[in-house]
Image 1 (cartoon, helix red, strand yellow):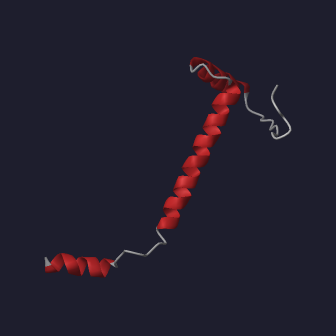
Image 2 (tube, one colour):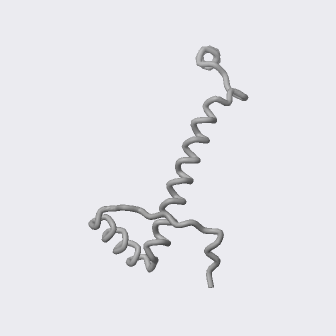
Image 3 (cartoon, helix red, strand yellow):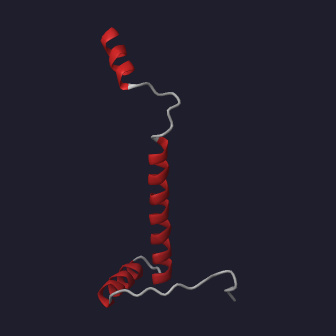
Length: 77
């Protein structure tokens, strides 16, 4: 028996055509809609986190040089 006390439900209002496509695609992979949607949400969340961390890394200046310094070093070689 599954413990539902630690889970919440979310009702999603989607068009019937999209629902049918998701259900069919999930079935082709041997998954339920719930499994497929959960995996899709996790993948999207991971992508968003990766993108956010990637953008944040642009602010990290440690170990970087300015464009001017880089161009000067290239001319010296």
